[in-house]
Amino acid sequence: MRDDSTRFPLEGVRVLELGNYIAAPTAGRMLADFGAEVVKVERPGTGDELRNWRLYAGSVSMLFHTINRNKKSVVLDLKTDRGRAVVLDLVRHCDVVIENFRPGTLERWGLGPEALESANPDVVLARISGFGQTGPLADRPGFAAVAEAMGGLRDLVGEADRPPSRVGVSIGDSIAGLHAAFGIVVSLLQRATMRNADQPRPPLTDRIVDIALYEAVFSMMESLVPDYLAHGVRRRRVGGRMEGIAPTNAYACRDGSSVVIAGNGDSIFRRYMQAIGRPDLADDPRLQTNAGRWARRDELDGAIEEWTSARTRADVLEALESAGVPAGPIYTAADICADQQYQARGMIQQLAVDTGAGQPVEVGFPGVVPVIGPTSLPLRSPGPALGEHTDEVLGSLLGMSPDQIEEARK
Image (cartoon, rainbow, N blue to C red; front, side, top):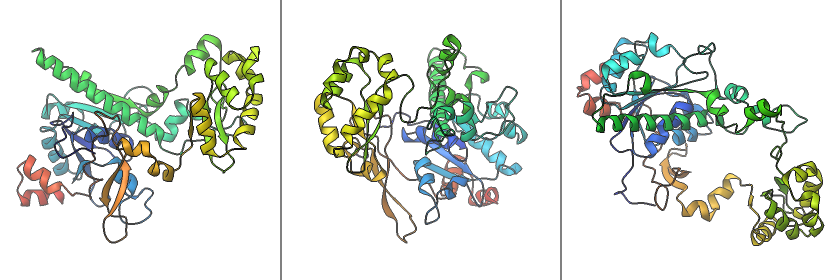
């Protein structure tokens, strides 16, 4: 872990987050993790609904603490003239605005791109929505589940003889948040480059980062569409396998745990089969290419699981590591917390939070990715209490008096 003198790459960047749920807050979290000052605006009373998602005890969920760490919380009512006026005052002091309302909402509130640019001619605006700001579906609401379906992901997840499944996290939201954070940094870099070259600032259209959830998912789908258009190939659900690549799958071990083994490289395959005591498969000329192995994938998976099911996970992984075959355990949360590799790179960091136990408790949270330097950058704070920084932000940044702050809060 690093000390308090750590320098963060985005120090000096200030972000105004007008976002709820996961997508926009994930973008804000990424920027905050690397040192940006992220001011999160929340509605009075309830705040971001994520505060109550998967709430097992206490008043704030660990999900909210995770996605809104390192941020400041300000309570403002964007449905009131006074609340919107304060937002525009804040925009004058910010480099970036992030929002994930339904398209047209900011415009109806008088907070559209032109209004934001009028308050701050240099502002970068990131807009996250189900289908983007343009096109025939722009006005339609969309959550991650819909985006994962329309982006092509859901059709490939699960077993071939069952309906499409879903991964266990809101992956569509998280992918959109990553794209938004990347787009923001790209836009800030372009702005700085043009400023350093004494060129005019990029036009407003070039400072609007438009992220559609379904497009963020679609961008992760590799050659799904090119394969279809070039060869008429329609990818199918194949469970733990990967279409056209073999052998790579999850396999059960004797002790009830499982491992993932990726032995699909040509040279790796030969070492793999030798390691499991099947030199006949290693030397079979019909299995020397991936196409041949895919055609016999059921036979290969059967031979592999016959070997893994007779051994513990530790024995399986030791044998495959010795043979130079990529393999790893399928981890639970408990496995992750105990793993030395996670610990060595600062990927589990302790923060004191209210878990409903009466006193703050030290809880491990995911570290900052990507790692810059020897270990993860340190986390500074969990997700804030609702409105925790209202007085600080409105007072120090806008110079508002306590009476003015109270008026804005009401």
